[in-house]
Length: 520
Image (cartoon, rainbow, N blue to C red; front, top):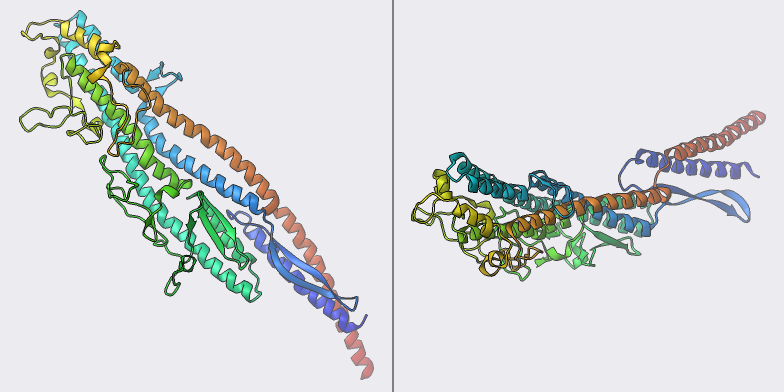
């Protein structure tokens, strides 16, 4: 072997070692970076006429299984969605009381408990109708009940507003991730066209995809030229650069929070909802190129907050409003308007109860639960609970409230006394999910059990989703993760290889020096 050939082999070997050291160093540095995929240097033997001539360095490769990667992104979206729902519903759980039996029969601090306290106080009152303390006890229990109802309604509204705020902020963050992907894709396309290394750019793009996948359910495909196409779970394409939707990139600065998705901040009221027919009902659309795509955005924190805002809390509000309508109506029909709408009629009294299921109080029952209160007349004069129409003290009214308002017979729960069950909410799309011909106690228990079931299901599903995510992450780590110990072992091996190649140069230098000395 000629000395020149030996030097060439050593030179290419040292260059390959330097490249491999850089890859190993980057792997170790990014071992804890979410979404980072380990890289492998690509070294091949070079020959000249069947004679070894050193090594060549090819493009760095990513250790990736795209099938596993796509599965992880889907699971990231599921876990993030359930986490967002669980966090939101925990605020409701803290004020809803506890239910220890699946049928709601054993409850503490719930709507059912507070309602039962009113019934218990009325039963005591029938025994001692002239006892002022017993009279006041009924009013006090009724106030505790309405306070509980008002608190629940307030939590629904607060969490619905929080969901809307989260939607507006998440859209901005999604835009940033999408346009980061678009910017990196453009750099990858250019680099591939010039035969320049792209592994690091691709890794950064996968990191951006990993970030995006927790905010929205997405999938991706990679084109031959290096571009990446991002889509929602139902296949709706989300552009990452204007040119992907046949628009000019001139003047477009990426990343940006303002494109491609657009929405608005808004203060949500109980009468507002997101209309799917293009009309403005107060809740703003999320648009892409001027088109409403809200219904296509599922999964992740964005999908979760859309669901909480448009489905979960509106249904809970409708259930509670329906209960309040029945509470006021049944007590009134039994002879005591103990509970009222809380809205003045402008004549010194309170507005009449209106049964319209899609109008806000006082024109209907929407948001009735935020305004229901105990009649001031009974607060000022609890003895009205034991006064007959001829002003004679009697327990008959209290007894009537027990048998009629709290009754479960057909005459006590059917017809105009039945609780509204469907066509509820300002959009008319909500339903209670249970029968309206139940007693007040059964209605309260059904409501509590239904809402506790939502909370429990989300919590259970979150645990399952996290377990699946962990399993997937382990599989991906085996393929794409960085084993720091292995990388350090590679570095040690590379150091030895570098020293061996350097030794060739040292020997060659010594041989040249000896040759020069011999010539001289």
